[in-house]
Image (cartoon, rainbow over all chains, first blue to last red; front, top):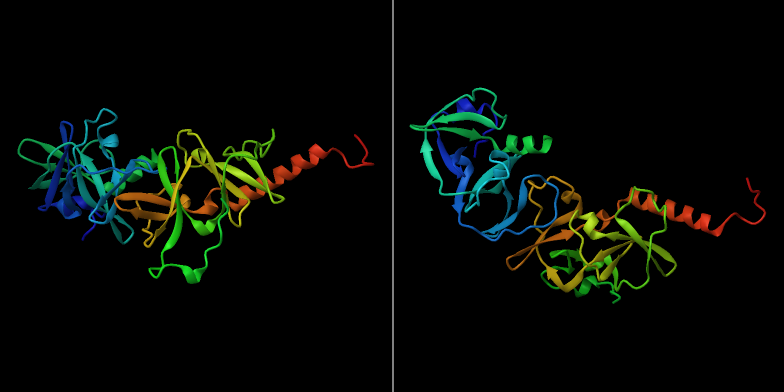
Amino acid sequence: MSSAHANPTSRAAGRSFVLFPLGKKRFALPADLVTELARPDRLQAFPHTTPLLTGVLLRRSHIVPVFDVAQVLIGPGAPARKFYLIATRRFGAAPEWTAIPVSGECELTTGEVVPPAGKLPAYVVGLLSLEREIVELLDLEKLAEAEVSA
Amino acid sequence: MRLTRTDPRKRSSRRGEAVILFSVAGTSFAIAVSAVEEIRSLEGLRPAPAGFAGSRLPKVKHLLERERKTYFVVDSNLHFHILPSRATRVLILRHLPVAVLVDNIERTTEITVLHALPRAFEGEERQWYRGLALFGEQVVPVVRPESFLSKGEVAVAQASASKLAAAAEGPAPGAASA
């Protein structure tokens, strides 16, 4: 599975993306990083100090950390999350599943990606131009780094 | 409750590891039976004396004397940065001058697989836990005993305790006063 790290804008052109909602806004991840959309599951929490992680899920015998990006993307007023988008993060060469709580159904789409414009955060690595909507394409690693350095 | 050493020849054929499940503030944890010398009530704990370790070891609030050894009692709520709860038991660790306050002992059981902590966990928990164990659908962190007090923290605690003990005994006979 390819990584979305290096020059993601050019590499993402013409590829598929998964759009996921957080409140009234939608965000995109490269489809090749997404494994499945899972129904609500039992979140299990234990003490830790990593920002944005809220616990783990047990999915098909995998222990999957839950990475609640809504805190960064939407803020504390984010609506209740109804599903988990299971995506792959990379730690060096090692892939690892992560569960991203989202607030509604997701959509698979293709579209053209343009470089991010203006003062967008570093984790927005492109803008996906759809018919009636511009959707921010995210890099999960940069999102995690942004929160750690904040 | 004194724990006896596990004879390796008597372990199960699945090569499991015996663990004690304990809880703190509603969260379950596991610790290897081989890492625990004794589980006892809070009887015998005494508050750390004023000035103990300055502000460097806020999670050590009590000391315990046992068989002529001083154990530094770690408040597990402070160690794990979780809200206060009511401790009723203390785990005395083996091979370390450390004891740990916990709320309850749930049971002793066995794990056959220790799952690595997902790499997404990048904070202090990488020191706290050896990994994660599954009990049915329940995920339980398996603690690393030596993380409750590092070697450096033990050295600080021992130096402070010695200094306070010497001060409490007063000047040696014949010592000149300033």
